[in-house]
Image (cartoon, rainbow, N blue to C red):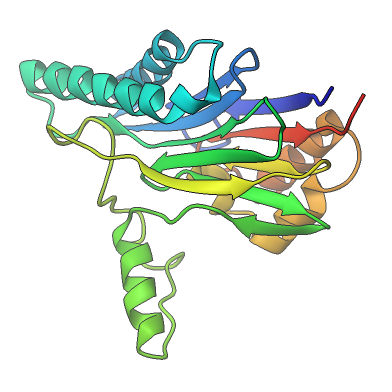
Length: 245
């Protein structure tokens, strides 16, 4: 029988006063997620928590074939709750990103990644990390446009980089972007908020996460984030796909 193991961290960082991130691990359904709230301390924290709460309510142990519909329904429910909550209180901006992985437990050879905003999912295989998501941000769209013209947009240093073009709760409707992924024994997936990928380059992330036990890998990644100043909340889940037991 194949198994899925996880290690996670969610911390305020060295600059922020509150942690607006939320982490979700549902091993009974093989669903794992990170949500990053926006809109000010308590509002952002509540927004990310609402996303995870609705995922818990909607996703139950059962057929993997229902996962996409269950997750889409949960995100729609969270979107409506956040939007109405913010509207009733006159908040100008309240919302959350979400990035998640759902693993098919019938064979552990496939899964689906869903995402909104700039939280990300990476697959680490053979010592290399592959980004499986595409940021819904002005910076990412400019990067894509400039790259198409043969140039390069420096998203990290540009003030437009973190302006989101899609988030849960900021508009009446929102759509999850999906990607099917193949899975092999030994794969490690990293689901993380921008407090991780803004300070840890992809190659460095692969080197930190690919080796050792999950807890040691999580500790190594966290030490790297802190060494880089941890200027934002940082949250991540490392998911490992085991071999036959």
